Length: 172
Image (cartoon, rainbow, N blue to C red; front, side, top):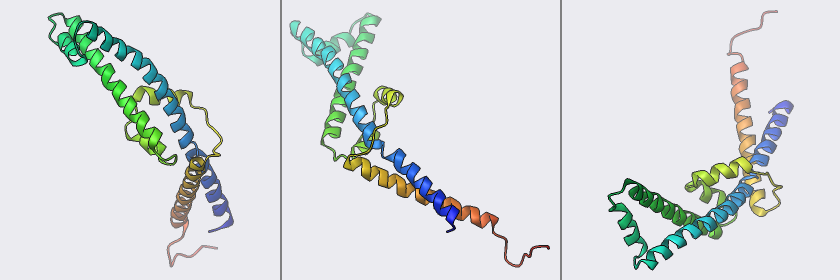
């Protein structure tokens, strides 16, 4: 590998390391947003449960009442409430998984089944952080190696394209 190719590979490795080192920070910011979403959804779900109980119904009975209503608005409202409850429970599950995962594994947990709204808003407002955590350093190292390997492979491919076939001579 020539001197320029080494420099390019190192720069690509550093770029990859910098980008990948942000994965744990993104996961942390996503997790914080989940907490806020859960807090707000909890208010809605608990209010629904309380209103159902005031009418001597459990949650499922209240949802069934909505579903069996002849009124389109009430049926749609029941579907909406079921969707809210499902999202609330999914976010609670994901929060638990993120809370118990090893720091290095949190980005994988996040990517397994992210909430589209929380993910998009986290991405929109993401503020990169300095990777001083163990997880940040590990992800940085992964990115460095990945960037270096990609640059090295592209360099080999470029050399093969530029290299002259055997038996072809230069015209002087």
